[in-house]
Length: 272
Image (cartoon, rainbow, N blue to C red; front, side, top):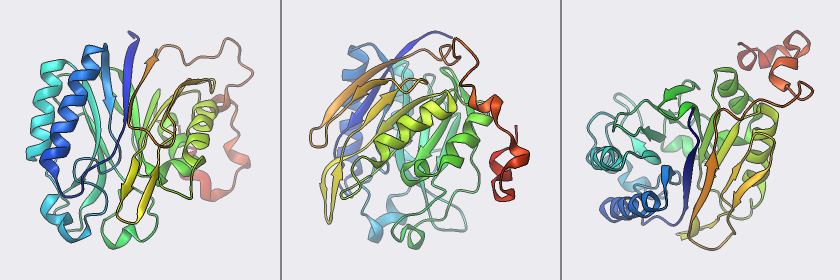
């Protein structure tokens, strides 16, 4: 696998203004491509803004032919750039999903993740995702976590056991929960011997003040890139998906697990 440069876009989103957010995404893609990046991440619900309850169904997109995703797919193909971006997705017969979609370098969509764990009343707006699965991309096997999902060790472990070598987490984490996600994503990297990329908002949206602290982490827990709590920034980090094997076998947590000893409620995260 060929090493590649990633770009994490720590930014704000403009509630309800999908076109403006789309334009900002396209500009960030151009800038990142100029810096040699081939994979770019945007925060949770970036395409529409997070607090859009009254127009959620109107702004949600179809995975197959949503207008915003279609534009992003064309741009991804033009730049040969992978895109990981948060957007509400239509869910026939139910409430929309709070989803993060992965667009590959050829413009295809190899996978997406609907948020599975809800925080602060999100269940009133969204239906939960029903599965956690890794998927294959031109970068290697990848998994996605959506904000609060990453606070449960079982989610990342499930994706790692499904073969993911890279976890991308897109979030709308706010005060007073500073530090949580940065610590968790560094830990998830270490305990699963996997790269993790974490993309969060900054700024204020109605009642929320987003706390930034986006970052990128090596499978050993080394911090590859780190943002502050206030500033919009394009954060770059290099990833080598072949570099996920320890030089020794002493900290091979996935192989050293003993599922037979664990609580039966963990069984779903212990297959593989």
